[in-house]
Image (cartoon, rainbow, N blue to C red; front, side, top):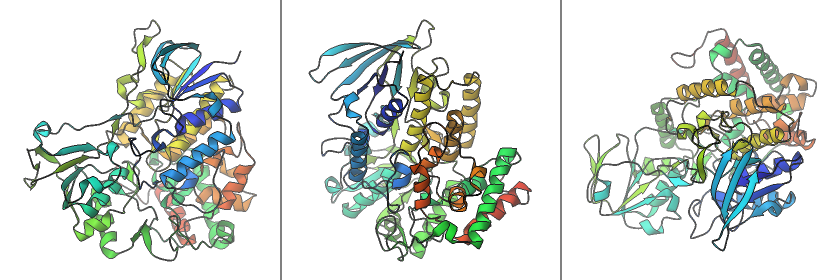
Length: 569
């Protein structure tokens, strides 16, 4: 008998969960969305919180899109309205809205594995018991509750305090003295926009972020004007992110060998990786031959020097141990002094000033803008897991206590948190899709969870906490390739590079081209013939010399002739 499934949320994670369940024949589905239409965070409106007017995505379209509906044309970064249209097209193409109840809020989920009682509130405000579901997918997103830092004296501040969740544009900050606290990717846009109209703008940090320009320069040559995420290849991840203790495992050794062969082939026969691709426009539809490092941001020595300086002070080199801020548009304002930076941390807030730990202060402050992120909350989860006495919640409110950030070890396959794996580089929707594919196969009884799920979860959680020690508050953080590969292995759709040696164009682009989500559709459950076409449609972003040097350095590391950081082991 097909299971009855409840999905909470119709944002990107909820939509792909609907699609993957439909693909395996699970169609007894109810999806509850509290808003009036799909999109989640991207359901933009002037009176809605979340996405702001000028938001442009930090991940390019090919890595942001789902593998079962990839975009066409060259890589570029969508405006939030374009991504919303993509989600609408996805929903229409696969007829997903027939499962969705809009303006419906989930009030409570109670019960135990395989038997979940769901209560909702409908558009009229009436509470409705929806009965028993065999499985629940929680796709409510990680932007449900703001994180407000505990700043001493904040309650005495006489100016305006606003969280970035409520920011739309810079007009309310015109001619004001502002202090912006924190710097994520949205914070980088917000501090820049505010600095354009404010009387003064101070950026308050506790530590420097690792910055990645969205057009890769000045870190890499970029003759095609590709987005920086186009450089995230199997080869590059093998070089930078595989712990040395794994370097001698046969699987990793074989992948390294395949990537080296691909780099040599690309060096000798460049047409295998580039073909006839000669783009006139870069990933922001700007002149590809102009030296842009980001949207509307030309290269300059001052900006390049600042980017390198901030990256060095972030403490992580290129290792992915810290959430990377893939937005450097604000650095021009830092270079020209429109944004003043204090990285010592805030000591306390006074009535009209912010005092920093180095003794300096931002006097006569009118407005405090908190770009301090969000908390994961699930207020609809009630009671305990069956009769176990264990609270029905994310253990320790830390998604690393879930298997692959998805499954509670004491619940198993009947409840999944989808959309709570946030790659240090790469798109959340692609990770959500992979989690949804595995969840769907589990419910269709085509796969089983590992028998040692609790032990694996504990081990992987400890490794993540050690590795991502530079971003201890971002519990959702994962390594894009490692996490995707681990789920692909459970599904049975992992990318085995050796299979494509005798298809040289495909082989080269798989090994040293972009880590596209559609590569996990080349084989196994959910295989799509169109995946090969998509991989072949995009050129290799790195130059021949870059690829050959990275291949060389992976072997230098393997032979212990080169260490990337102290304690590389």
